[in-house]
Amino acid sequence: MGVQRLTTAEAGFTLIEMVVVIVIVGILSALGGQFIVAPITGYIDLSRRTRLVDQAEISLRRMQRDIRHALPNSIRIDSTGHYLEILNTVGGGRYRLYPDGGSGDSLDFSGNDNGFDVLGDLHTIPVTGQHLVVYNISTSGASGNAYASSPDNMAVVGAGSSVAHVNLNPGFNFANGSPYQRFFIVDQPITYACEGGSLNRYAGYGFNVAQPAPPAGTPDLVSQGISGCQFNYDPGASQRAGLVTLELSLTEAGETITLLHQVHVVNTP
Image 1 (tube, rainbow, N blue to C red):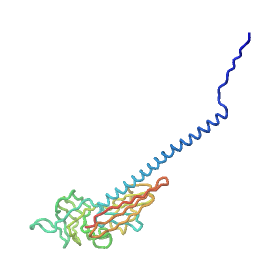
Image 2 (cartoon, one colour):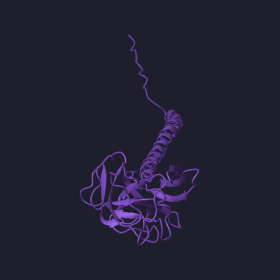
Image 3 (tube, rainbow, N blue to C red):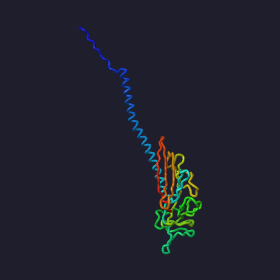
Image 4 (cartoon, rainbow, N blue to C red):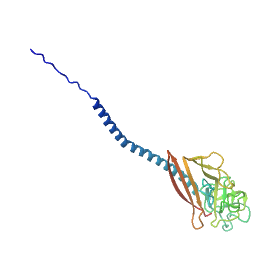
């Protein structure tokens, strides 16, 4: 009787097979990584650009809102184009120039006047200590300039004013009347400053300064990451409105975006 011998084959990988598999997996991983990395990088870049554009647009819109509330002919920009200053208005209307049938309090331009009637009501009652300006025509010179050291067109609002009548304390003699009998209520100057890589907003800096400059006090931060800015003002003429040009550049992770925005402003006092 013979003995039958069973032979069992051992299963496994050879070294060559393992090397081939590793090489193939490496190639597939590299190809797959390229397909994944490119979209992710594009998404990150797009998110960064969107964030920069949104930040610049918010800053420009805020500046636009203040500029459109500016006293006519009160926009000033320094020689570097990094500082923009305005006189902020909170109200305005038309003053009574002639008495109505012998009644009514008109604004007298021949001497000091303590108050006048408003033609139509104001939206809000002027606050004591605010300033009232009539016929602001310039940001320089001694006459018709609310920035002057002794302005001849800006009085102080007194107590007891209402939406139909404005008191002046002390009494004031305006040098020039407005052709359209306009007046404006001003509360404070506002300055936008590009400094230290930031766009800052200063409120209440003060009147009677020679030119826009780095104001004192703590500012409100409008935007960070500012790598460049340029402000410009074309005062226009009597036939057309003035034009403010605002240019902001923001930088993040080595990428810079630049936005330019133009704002039409009223320059007829």
